[in-house]
Amino acid sequence: MIERAVSGRLVLDLKHTEIQPDEVDLLLHPHTAGVIYFSRNYVSPSQLAELTCAVRDLRSDLLICVDQEGGRVQRFRDGFHSLPPMGSLRILLGDQPDEAALQQVSALGWLMAVELLQYGIDLSFAPVLDLDEARSQVIGDRSFADNPELATALAEAWIDGMHQAGMAATGKHFPGHGGAAADSHLELPVDSRSLEQLEQHDLVPFRKLADKLDALMMAHLLYEQIDSNPAGYSSFWIGELLRKQLGYRGVVFSDDLTMEGASGAGEIEQRAELSLQAGCDLLLVCNQPEQARRVLSWLEQQPVESCAAPASLRADRAWTAGQIQKDARYHVALDLIARCHSALQ
Image (cartoon, rainbow, N blue to C red; front, side, top):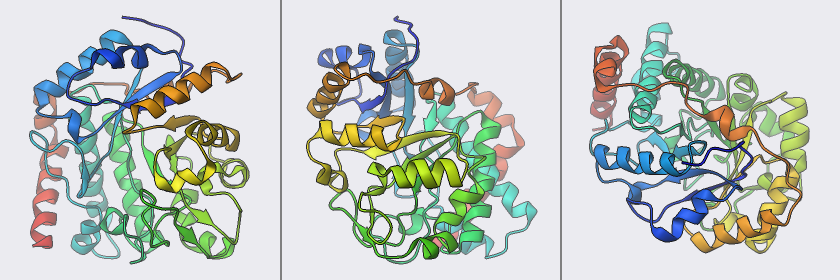
């Protein structure tokens, strides 16, 4: 096992359910900060535990991440509870959830987190703070609500649950993906609204939760009336609005730099450079191992400062199955899951 001061900037992925021989050097590279798991990396809880142990045996300092939002975006299913889409909470709890209802949402966020912590996962990229404006092809019921105040209240409860579990929370996708129709995996979405319009709507959850969020993920989205660069490449969005105006002090992730929404910046090296210049702390490069290698080679040639971000996001506790099932929040969360799935039928 190699232990070193955390300095990496790149979060990359693995091809299969076990570390492949040609991936060892990627994981050991000093500019690698972490690993993100996908559904292809998962077969069963025992296999997941073995994979995570293998990663930790190589590098104890790596941040291990996954998208485990619930609904359509839940990478681990068999052996994990089927989390409902966040949009179902509004259907079930209404537009003005009381404190008891918010405690149930908190228990759901707690359950999502403890199930991952049980198998050594540090971070789930959740919650989604985008508002469902019935436009986006990719957001939809991943969003808590279309109303910014309701979305903020539900997301805050979810974040509280994650924090109670010992997991950092990552809001996405800043500054709001719900108002553009296109899927940024396939093309660059364009949002024509003014900054004033966004301030009154999409930016509300990010602004109100800035002090609670440990990390944020940027959107590959162009707000053409506000800045000529997509948000993930924009010093205005990250440096001026997020850091200065909102006072955000947490970690900033790029979204996956291999997505088509990121491709307009040029080759993968240019995408990495623009992301770091704009203010991203960590870079995601997924599903294309050679692109990850190119970013690592490029980083070797750059005067990139050390980054404490991965260490700040590492989970601070683990849970056992016995601890989870004895906790009162477990039963509250299971009841909410059952009622959400019933409401969707």
